[in-house]
Image 1 (tube, helix red, strand yellow):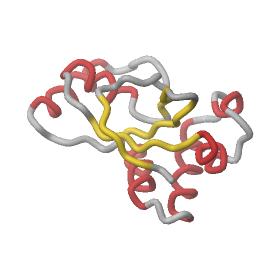
Image 2 (cartoon, helix red, strand yellow):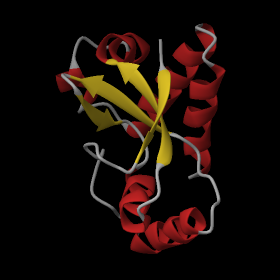
Image 3 (cartoon, one colour):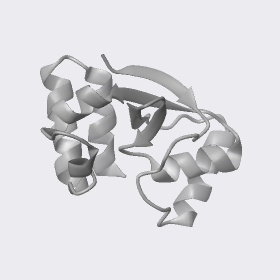
Length: 123
């Protein structure tokens, strides 16, 4: 079952930061005590790989403030994305991945995860 943790960004990002202005804006929000939507992570062999949140991760590291994260097991992530393993995950496009995880979360009653994934469309 997906669970929530707090992280200062100590996980493998999905991709490199593409918008440093966005990172600075999020870091300022975090420093001011504002909250951000949770990032979504996959737990693999004791470490975490990001599904969402590259810019929030960089902002957390820059500001030193922890951010919420929803963690999926590898099995949950593969089931949600209808893949066999992460080698297929690496080739999936973002929108399809977000939609698949959001739908899986809704089907399994994980409203917090569904909300976190739907927030990605507004990012």
